[in-house]
Length: 387
Image (cartoon, rainbow, N blue to C red; front, side, top):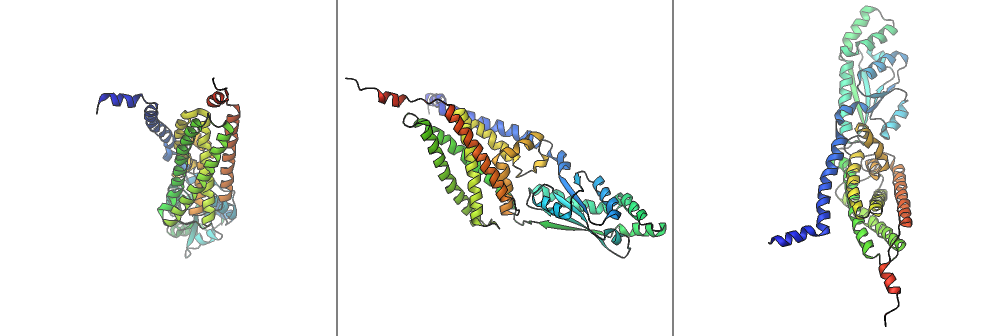
């Protein structure tokens, strides 16, 4: 191999763009992921937990004692039904339920008391692990000296004799048990990875399609007008989105991941995800030309991070928590969790994806409207033939 051929390769625009693209993958992923995941474990206390007291005023000191001992955001203004709805919607991450009759049970030396915990596994795996650990720690705390203050206040409110109160406190140290109830349980780790896989595959495919459609549009610019080319782009994107979503849904189902909402809804939702990603990726190319491909690299990295597929959004740095709802990945992850693990928010997330697709389409139309097109070939064709 001679040196001249290498120099000729390096002088080709496609080679230069390829090298820059490879470099930008490293730059964007390193910058975005490290800043986004930086000190995530220090922000675990942002995960919201609801404490629902169904045992009235006597158990209120216990509820306040639990809230004071937890290094999490705690909410006590929910009814059990409201808390369960918030848990299903991932607005809270766990419910600690003090059931009716709890203080009566701990006041009876011969009775067993039980704290109820509700955890939603239709979440990033980290959430379920953290919350189940919290349940064990809270129960242990209730069975040790750390709960003495709350128990003392409760027992004083019950106006029991001191001797009897001491007996109850001693006996209570091993009588409170944890009843952890899991909603939307999952026994297959692959289910928790499907949302991230769909987001990555959808936007990466959208990036590559947008680049090739941009190249095709440029090649056809001397033959067809800008509106014809834009319309053709959308027709190609729509057909491609329908085909790829069908293939993706068939693959997921054939590999053992099924949706309780049915095959057709999963296909429709994946179609909406892919088309929304295509509209966003195309907007970058229409806005910046070929350099829009580099913007899409940053958008890919940012969406994978801010989607909440691996780390709860509550733990991300403020910027990524803020920008997440503006990206298709945010709603794609929510909806896919609902489909493959459990939840009821599929249609709402689909609506947001449609809104993102519509907004990016409107912006694409505006860019096309204001951009002047060159018609070199058609101008030449319109000239009279020379004699």
